[in-house]
Image 1 (cartoon, rainbow over the protein chains, first blue to last red):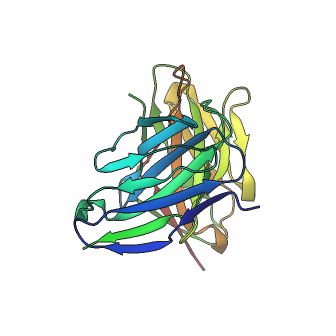
Image 2: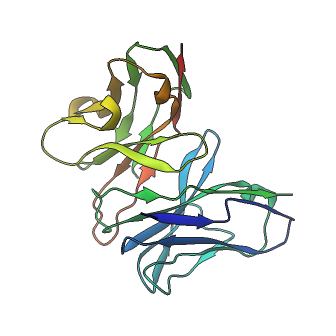
Length: 114
Length: 115
């Protein structure tokens, strides 16, 4: 069972570079989301999607774009990387957008911007 | 706005001792409450959740939590700590807000277990 797969696991970028963090799930989940994890701050929601073609902003969306062309994939794009975007990024998915369902997480992408 | 407070950032216990990790939430409507665990270099996985019904919830690996509405708390406990319990623990809350629900996490607590 693959679950939620994130690539790459590690990445170093220079300030101003762009890149895409990939996220794919094979559970046919409607709801997908991106979080960033920073020390002492827990996980903060960046963007989320309730289905193919539908995305919305979370708590900290600035500097990031998303799209959802298929149910399976939900890539996160950094348009012009900044040192403040150094973080661990997690993709998550759940069966429904209902509040009481379990979220399944990928193993994370550790991004360093220098 | 919904929020979660996890007091302290680090808890250290001896192997075999009681584990108690505290979580308080703010709410004006009934919440759904979750505990997630993150082992080193891994993603988060669900330990247990409270939605409705019985207020004492049992999860995986011997953990349990009790929803106390009067105290707005959802503390996580385990009677006897094991070395393998060393990890970071996150309390989270969500509410049904119509079209979309959002999961809000606390800042996390790192649990260390001493031999």
